Figure 1 (cartoon, each protein chain N blue to C red):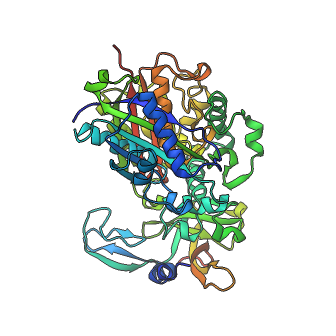
Figure 2 (tube, rainbow over the protein chains, first blue to last red; figure 1 turned 90 degrees about the horizontal axis):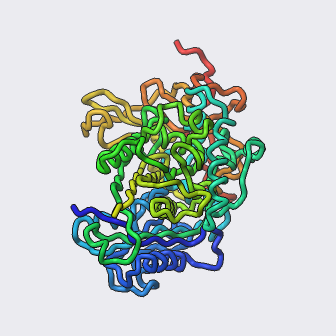
Figure 3 (tube, helix red, strand yellow; figure 1 turned 45 degrees about the horizontal axis):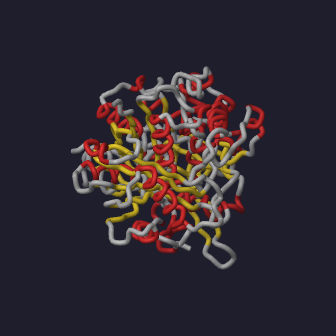
Length: 387
Length: 134
């Protein structure tokens, strides 16, 4: 298999984009990434999306976006893996290039969640869970995460207030990301006052639904000199799965998908967890940040909140997380989030992040995209190319 | 309204019917075509007794559309006595009385109504154990 690199990135701001249909969001991100890569054609297009059928009454996004971008005729498909659809599309594009079947592939993540009012989106998002045994008896996605958070608080004897640190970090970083949904900081009082969604999860624990699209252009490592775009090596992009139903796992706090995907990615990249300098976390809910860090091996089980409250994950800490605001601050256009994470990590590795959130001298960055309550996990490791 | 699903799941929703592996005796709810433990496909139907303990719980304040009229309501993960864990609603209890580890038993309750003209869906919920086990 050939090694691959990302030579171009593009994104739309994360907003309630009432002016744009889903196809335009996708096309905007794709064309921006192509412009950044300075390529005018692509060999294939992989579109990560979860809910276009349910919320825009539009499936068939592969052909549709290829068509509207002016590339009708190329190979193009939609890739779906719930909230992990974005990085799953990246994985498929990577395999297409690594296998030698394509020279230039584009992966885009696109989502439009604000076409209907929030309660429809809540029901649509719950389709990431088990429809027969979770969603159809009344469990929202927040409720499933709440079951994990309550169990975590019980096992490790921590308080709800301890979780405030993750949304506080996310909002603090989002302020400096022009594409983020939110540009205001929050504090512990805001967290304590926030409306309850599914106890113990409140509004501040929950990432906002939004619209947006992000894209990357992938080429083989040995061809990067041919292209003008600033290249970043993809050291690993590994996908693993776990049971869809949270109840089918022996230990609700043990995310085997995270463990497998992260350890495999580190092994393929040939590095240890402590070499990772920043991580774009899948902080759909605060508890997911905690479980993602612990199960990826960045700290011992039960220690993530202590480490976070000691400053380890803040922008000036040992390993900053959610440097562009994460899902909480940048926003969570579900099927696009995985590619926003990768686009943001690329900016960090290139040294192109806005100054206040640029991590110094980044050689290794990780992005982890999680679908459902941990059923699909894709861990991507990016590496700076030293001339 | 998903009538075929409602009909198809009646054995599970009314009777907690799962299955048990004929090879390694591992229990499953919901029923699975392949044993999670030993990968055997020799699975036999098994009706769970409906007793268990609370593994985790939550009070839902913001619900999917179909359940909006019922908020706040309680959901839980319950460890059934036979082994499997099940996701279910809790009933006949206030949220400040719930504790992890509390014994519960299955009852049939209304899960939701599909508008004024749609059918009413019933299914399992769990309540605090009333009788002491023999």
